[in-house]
Amino acid sequence: MFCLSHRCLVPWLFSVACLQAQAPLQLKTRSVFAGTSSVQQISPNASGRRHFLVQFSAPPSAATVAKLGRRGVRVLGDVPTNGLLAAVSSPVDVSDLGVTYAAPLAPANKISPLITTGDPAAATGFLLIEIYSDVRLLEAQALLLNLGIRLHQNPDLGPTHLMVVASPQQALATATAIAALDDVSYIFPASAELSSGTPSGACLGALTTNGSVSQLIPTYGYGWDGPGLGAANVGYVYSHLTAQLAPSAAEQAIERAMAEWSKAAAITWTQTTATAARQTINVVFASYDHGDGYPFDGPGGVLAHTFYPAPINAEPIAGDMHFDDSEHWSLGGSTDLFSVALHELGHALGLGHSDNPAAAMYPYYKAATGLSSLDIATVQTLYAAPSAADVIPAPVPTPTPTPTPVPTPAPVPTPTPTPTPTSSSAPPTLTITSSVTSTLATYAAFVIVSGTASDAAGITSVKWSTNFGTSGTATGTTTWSATIPLITGSNAITITATDRGGRTSWRSLVVSH
Image (cartoon, rainbow, N blue to C red):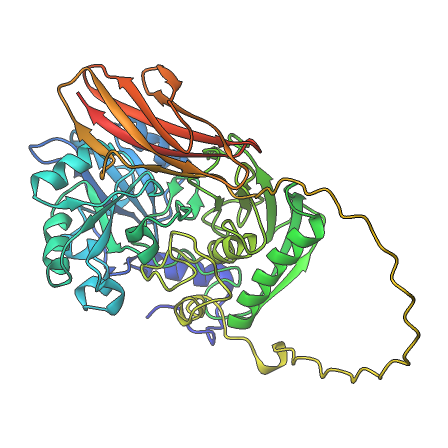
């Protein structure tokens, strides 16, 4: 029997050892109970590359991961408990590495329970397909098209996500057919924002030393309180805040998000100044390569990332939250700091991504006012619920005395101010109208791409560039067109609109020639 109860009185180290020795591989769809015998070899099928779910008798060390790499195994991410997702293209001897289980994910384990149970969240028929990180997006697109699956494009999709559409009645059948593909790791409902094309920043998932964790993982580890359901005191420190917001305003937004999690679980937050302290979340705004091995991608795309708590991540990086300072951060705007911080704090506490678009932990951001019942239920699988003493009642307002009237002086006329041009912190809106999809095929030596762009401050230019180093400026701004030369192969084309404030938006398409 697992030591999961908060009444478990055995010491911490014994509890962890007990859990690690007996715990299964924890997926959203099921718990996979590994065998006790040693696995000798992992082999692909006749088609070549194959993806495996692998469990070890103890947490795989950095040395074990390095040995796997030298033997031709590509490690793609961690799986609780003591597991990895990995890809092999030739037989690999693992007899000396303590492997107790190795098998491809069963197709049924790749489909979100929301789809298999007919939950209303999956009723639209729009599905997100997560592929393994070693799979090229164009390869995955070709596999889906060969099955007769209809792709649905959105430029905000993460680098391992594709979106498909089927009738609500065919959603499960479509998901079942896709799940049989080895390159697919998970399938879950797409949000209304994604299916309608509404801009939605992506979160790639919480991070460990072995990469981002798959959508199929519900939580990772035991939380900051250790095994069982207990209370936790978590520190936080602001190492570097964005210059786009007043420091006090940014701190208030993040701390308001912390308060929401404290309403859901027995978590106390304490601000410190020690960036390397144990059990402390270091809050950092940074751009591009910022030293953690996971560089940001510039404006648009990924907004932030967070490292899971110890022990899956070593101190001091465990729990740290990094925000992309290339984004246009706001309070209540399109990139709302409170909403993003609310999501990232869930990762810092040990939560994975939710499959349900209604949850704050869904992998695509939207404006939030607080946690959903789904988020609360999940965090309470790691921590105790808050006690009544933790809930601070709202203060009773003190009546304001009626002020004594004072004479109003005669108004002094003031000159009418000279109007100033309006500006906005939001990036320009950019749309490609010449193509309904983001992937095309043509035998022509060029492609004509056209569309529209708009911004309150005005558009200054629309430019294009390709993955082969060619670039140019489109004709027009609010309505634009560009003739782009192609070379044989896959041409990745990026269109970028710039407004008078220097803010940019981009859209992309791939043309096969």
